[in-house]
Image 1 (cartoon, rainbow, N blue to C red):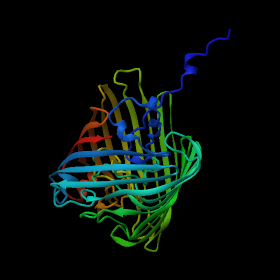
Image 2 (cartoon, rainbow, N blue to C red):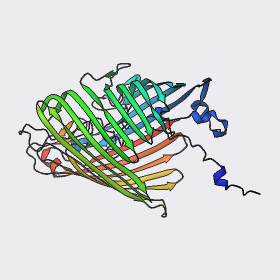
Image 3 (cartoon, one colour):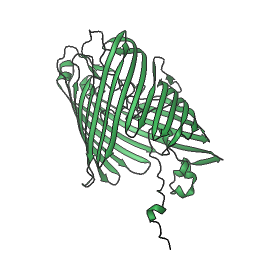
Image 4 (cartoon, rainbow, N blue to C red):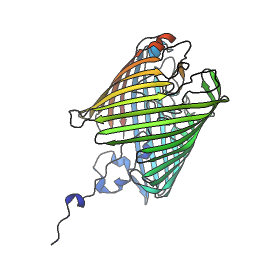
Length: 451
């Protein structure tokens, strides 16, 4: 008589629903075609809608309400230093699969209430098309969690997130996310992927159905990933760039590498980028290095995770030498250094220790501090989109200031998330030498329902 196989060998690992991401088109719900993979959750009726043989649709929605309040914004130097406003965003989507052909549509309704002195393009776009593209799968291209060998060709309006979104992200924190018009090819080579892009960013309008692709900016390149190693090249052109008070045509090439992983509770992520090209007939030579490492203590109560992050982004050391040394973060994620921070990744040195914890009941929280210095004394201070918010002037100090942040997050139901953050940014010597120097207090409260 033969021996019975172990139970673990007899049972296949149960399918897990995909994590809801900012790029909803990455979610693969095709497993729900098998009734055995259904749990009875009410949302499953919207996630797999059979239409015909080899054809189905997936639908979903996000409704986000966010309130942000600032006291002494930009250290008291903003047009409206004390400001509180409400963002409301409704983002439904429909994903139609017909064999190897697929169409994805995601409109947006984004409104802002009370933004002073007035709402900008990241605050409000009213009703418009956030994403709308079609793609075709050639070969056994990767879908969801399935590895394959093949390629997906995509054309249309789409959000793009590359790596940790250091240079190309979705800008999901603000009310109006960032999308691109153009073409993308995603090649699957087993466990390796290569993304080829040729796109232009979408410029949101303040009215309804008036979002248009940028007439001045374009982006192209390749991003390859395998086993925690990323290598990439990105080309960028801006016909109306501005650095240090000079406006001109910018052609910039970025070569980057990233190493990330986790093992035995440790996790790490290191990335470096070198940039070259020309701006206003001046050669560009710029760079950035970012390193983070941490450890999660699973044996302790609340399973705290302690992480240290350090970032350096070059600045222009001499505005008169006809070389540009300011790093350009291109299209970075919205929450770059924390939940709320006025500082962007240009001409910066930052150190950011952070501790997160899980308190049970789907409640988690974090506390963090950030300290910032200018890399080059001759260059100023920039925000996340790359706008100069404090010129260098005659200032000699490097220290920008220090920020403290506390955040809490509650996944009240699988669909409803409630979160909040409180930050304070005390000015350093550079801020004191260049204008108003009050402590910024920033409060963010958010309710997000999505399935």
